[in-house]
Image (cartoon, rainbow, N blue to C red; front, side, top):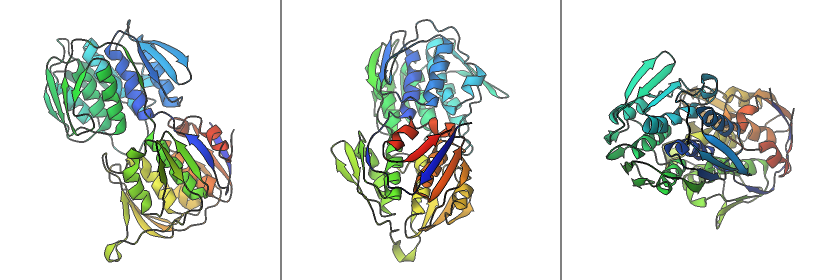
Length: 426
């Protein structure tokens, strides 16, 4: 088991470059199954989940070649089967995004129930409904899904019953090789969904409405190879902004796409956090006065997540930790996942003053003096939140199960050391 050992209480300052977005890289890697020609991807983050996806594709028969730092070329010329091995597929939920391209190109896909972070119920009903609308038959067995479309998929008008990111991505890839036109309504529109759409367009696909909640996809008989760059991870940016604000350092975040952080500016702004946009970079000044903004009519102000362009659910854990250092009281409302807050007892053990109201809501009273503690990372985002708390806390902290953080943050310990953090992996 990997463990981070952190000596906290030091301002972290300097320059950090944002890594590629793992939530874009994973479906973009899966999309290479849509053609037998090589697809070149750059800025692919070197993280555990990406390595798992590459291993899954290699097992299927995709030729996988590393062509440089964060660069990969993949060619699905000789796919051997359409049933990824259970032990790999169950390592992460994103393995299910292979179903769309496998079904579209080969007419069959078989997948176990995927794994991933245990942040609440995340059923696959929306995926299955979309595949059935496109003409697939679905057999649901205990812990296994078998999907078939021996005659190919056909275009359809599909209304997703929830703005599921991965269901949207699966439907996009399946529809890109379906016969006819598909309209995807109530689609997710996150930056990583847009990156996937742009890749498919570069491969010869036709998609209208990119960045909106309605996509019109004209199915093609085949797609071709291309090259693309994975966009920056806006969740890393949100994490690094909180890191600088909590430790009191100044931080220049390069390749941050500031336009993607308007809603984060609103949410973090309720805690007194400010930053400057400098072309494609974000600069967070040092020693910010973190004060919770007053709500109207003496109401407790709130930060809550929502589908894009709302505040990202994956940043609610980060916002909760950040709130412990702001003077005042604020409600963190995580309405999308009922288990997202189940790690808060670890933060309380470090000195955080947090009242968990129910599985979706927590009230944070700050500022709290945080102290080093021994904790365990339960998932990617809670793990990063605990890491930020440890870096701001007085004394030594140990974070066990650090490999969970590695699933979403590339080489995070070395990058933090470059900012002045005292962090070691044992």
